[in-house]
Image 1: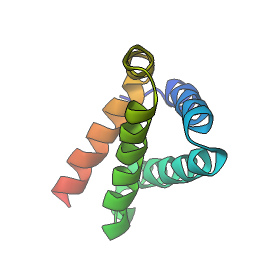
Image 2: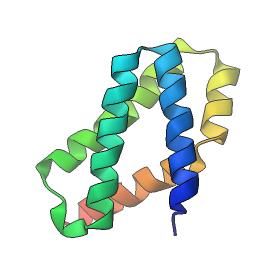
Image 3: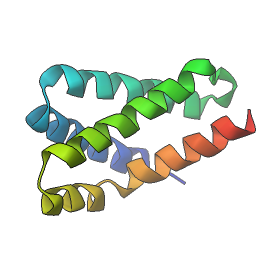
Image 4: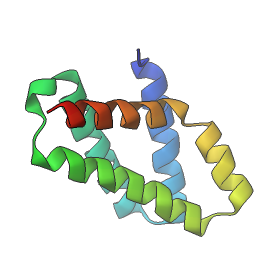
Length: 98
């Protein structure tokens, strides 16, 4: 079960890191992709071909951040977003069933 309040806090944290590391537009795009994925997750009948592209966008931002920040800072980020990582895995599982 995903605690939506914790997910919200972790998403805010991730967006702040993306904003600080990359730029504001990237943080906005990340937020948009996550919003779409949350909507799809809450109503699984809405999964479509774009679901995978939104999922890949979130993973791309995590990879970009990894390249831009120090390894210890990235590890700290990963330790502070376990709900997001869990959420992404659940989305992958749901998409694979469709």
